Image 1: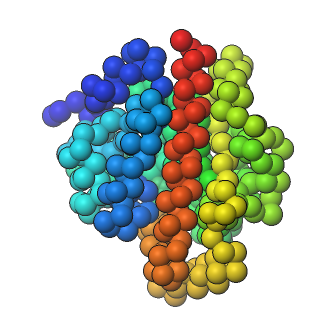
Image 2: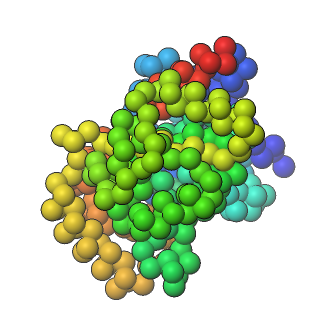
Length: 304
Ligand code: PSU
Ligand code: MN
């Protein structure tokens, strides 16, 4: 059996030399964005990091090996192959069976942390689903962040989720949440939600300082950096509300449950919005990658 956990040479060299590294997830590529734009997006996120002097570590399981840092064929595979969606609990099963899978925020954070990577950029975090009080559908992204010391830059959580309940759970799980240049929690495609944050930071250096204090205090949770999409790039709120209502009703009517819910809603929303939600999704993800690059650079400087 091959070793089930491997770092690319590029990533392991960067970590050894304490150069900045940012982890990127594969579920957003495999299950969150439609083909063929997903392949362009995966390559673009990596090149945004490289242009900023940061090593990208896209993470996925390929043929039973959890890989931190993919080569160009690996990136192509996560975009083109019909892969399973792996959260932390799926990793050992997929590895032992020699299968391939895209990793969620939870599984990506777990593997990044195992590799010694401290900063991770994604689109939106998973969270508590609407109706969770009866379905118990809460993303393992939350419980994983409670025990995984990775700073995750996201545009908040998708408005298809129960944002209030998600913020409550992050509080219960003692996961710090800071707004990046805002005191309002963003809602993915929109710059704002109706929820206010206790804390905000103005720049990446402040986040690195929080990470250092977090470590010194013996905290082992992740840190959520909530980075809102710029106002001029956000989705039209009225169209957003209309499409969201329609997509949620369709998921309900079609009886979509479990891990199929998030991919179903994301792709349905792209369809119902005539592609508009996709452009916004890409813009907010690029924006998160840029901020993550700055945080990783400040973190590397603090630890040089
Ligand atoms: N946010 C996005 N696109 C995505 C996801 C989140 O912008 O594809 C994915 C992430 O991988 C996240 C997962 O970890 O959805 C959450 O799925 P679930 O709700 O089944 O835990
Ligand atoms: Mn779920």
